[in-house]
Length: 426
Ligand code: GAP
Image 1: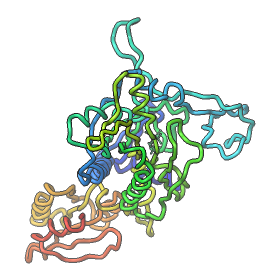
Image 2 (image 1 turned 45 degrees about the vertical axis):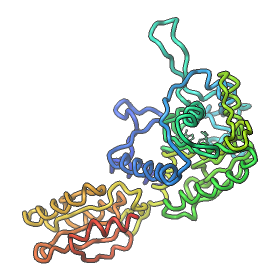
Image 3 (image 1 turned 30 degrees about the horizontal axis):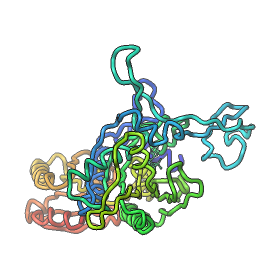
Image 4 (image 1 turned 60 degrees about the horizontal axis):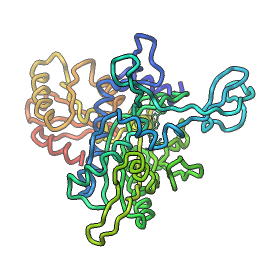
């Protein structure tokens, strides 16, 4: 099995990710997050939200609707330009995104490829119930459009002044013609976006600032930060003036995009102003200068980050599988074991410790099998610390704490545990 197969298998086996509609044979490009997956994903989203909004006095958040007025996608340019150029192999009829082709022949059978054809990947739906009166609408192809639509509302309902930022974590939908590579290219996925509104003269400065800041965010999360890199786009999206990706450069992804930092200039607000008739300009309260704010966008994939983090943390030592996840991201922070499952006093004490830690952090109680199997099982899901309640605990109220990555053990009084783990999680 290669690394990707191992990660996919672990995700299913341990309840991180399930194929959507599996009992019906699956639903290509759609996945469900299982009990451990949703814990880890929520951890990620909380970290991002704290880093982006709570720690910045001039950034606020919104949570916009998935379906907007259909004209939004005309104004944004997506109806015309949100296309994937695809080539088909004349021999095996497999289809490939132009971006994925290294040479002009079929990567599967070497056959000749057709000229690329453009497919629009906006996902359509219809509003209303009466046939003939239904209105065509779109599931948002990128989450950021709702931020532009709410730009004026946020400005008028807060005391923010340009420069300021609006954040959002939300779903986006794309009718990808070639979904695949597990969570990497899905048809429904989640994005975390910052749209930073600034004066045109400050665009370059903030573009550089956010590029570096976002890299720091990811470097702090990854087990191997050296696997992250910037990639500068030469071929730009239809709205972008300058674009960098933060990419994951290790195998099996070898330089695939996790987040895009885009210089969107005044494209979005100008177009929405033009199509809606609304005045989306800003007047500086000090200078009275009126201008359309320029936008630096940082738009990342929550699911891609999730996937790259798993791949980056996956490790095998002898016959052990270890997910060396950053403790802040790991689904459980601590697992608590009674040394023996059939000793009532040990089980009772372990439950007591579990209950005392549970309100402050995600913890789990494990009584199955022997200690070795329990360590193995927790290592495989990335739990950074295991606490064992043994006979000495009943005498002196101390427990052993075993560290996932070093396998080192230390003994600590039970009443110091909460503080101990909270310090480690800072
Ligand atoms: N608003 C800009 C925008 O949407 P993008 O580069 O198309 O830019 C941003 O998307 C991020 O969304 C990507 O870096 C990637 O992490 C994630 N993403 C894009 N398409 C995806 C897909 N089909 N499946 C999973 N994640 C995707």
